[in-house]
Image: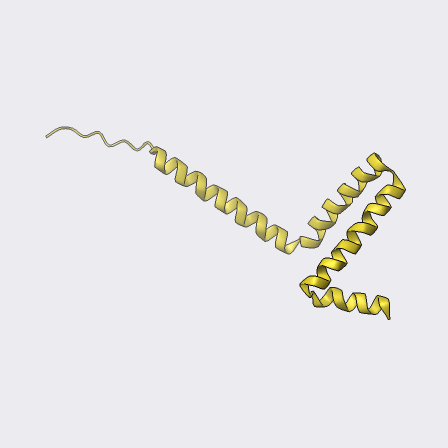
Length: 94
């Protein structure tokens, strides 16, 4: 019989599967981090965007952008029937 040389080098399929496993693990880790630190991550993003708007548009235009964003959020929460936001709106209006 022929001497079949068994190579221990990984095939392309093994390499690609390993890459997919690493990506899935990283994605799961990032999602877990985001779920535990959702407020911190969202606050960081919002503060960074506010800083960029302050430098580009100035204080009053940034304030106007925030007012419009908050009104849009409240309208969207009203149509989505978000209970927590609706309670806040009722407290503000009463």
